[in-house]
Amino acid sequence: MTASLTRRSLLSLAGVTGIGLAVAACSSGDGGVDKGSGGSGRATAGGGASAKPVATSLSPARVPLAGGVTITVAGGGLAAVKGVTVGGVAARDVRATATKVTFTAPHQAMYTAGSADVALFTDAIESSPSANQSSDGNGSAANDGQAGATQDGATATPTPTASPVPDVGSAIATTTLAYAALTDVDRQLEYAMAHWKDYNTAEYGTMNPIGGDCANYVSQTLIARGWKQRSDWYNRDAGAAHSATWTYCPTMDPWLTANAAEFGLTRRSLDERDKVKVGDIVFYDWNDNDSPDHTTIVSEVFTEPDGTIRIKSASHNQDGPYRDLDEMITVQHPGGTAWFHTFDA
Image (tube, rainbow, N blue to C red):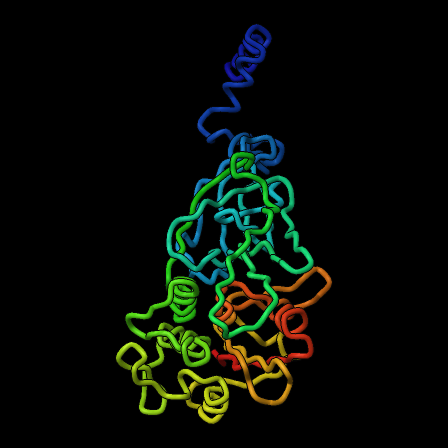
């Protein structure tokens, strides 16, 4: 009888208070989750599709300058995310659920340590390459794009590409990550970007008066990567004493081949560009006579929508951070060719 009276009392109370009782029952200490209907649970905050988008954490929060690692942003209301930028650069491989977004971190635009805004957008963000100044939206802020002779001491002034990404102010959620020089390749490219225009003459001098500084520059980046000077490869007293293997392309190229096993290098042809990575060495032969005329360090590798693998590199003479390989051997030097020394690890 008592149980029956209790049920009738509750039903009577529900008839009087109506919605109030239903709300109280739904929020009685379960953190905003309705565990009715078989206990499946329906989020009313944070992860629901109707929740205000928010990014609550990011992992890892510290990434290499060269990027390439998978980032996870956790939060709520993120199912609509289709595009991500990091420091204004479009990220690739964006995937989203209500509670997290994953993407591949791009390399830092100029391989410089520091914090970067991570912005989440409801629109997919695609790159917008042009004919002679193609950018993958993955760090190519510039391409010197000038025709003419190399190893002539000329400095090409980078021309920024039009940004294909929206302003961070239109993002539905934001957070930050930190870029740091964590690997040998990071340190190599950090040096390359710091000195493609501002020569480190106090330490290594310049070889422009004797024909060009490209090999001198490439050698310097290898020191930054962790290589050590040795009796057959050196630059001393700000360039006053130097080996031909350090400063002269036709000598440096066969020296790398002869010591490939020791250095962990593999010589590759132009049609093996799918094996090329950031930090690898490129040699160019302008007149295809089997004697190299120029050398650079790879600063970016990406695949165009049509499947073309694009390779850009940093160099002296012409001085530039993102010079396009194909432009160099077809526009600047028609009939030229190139090959690579790639690092095995």
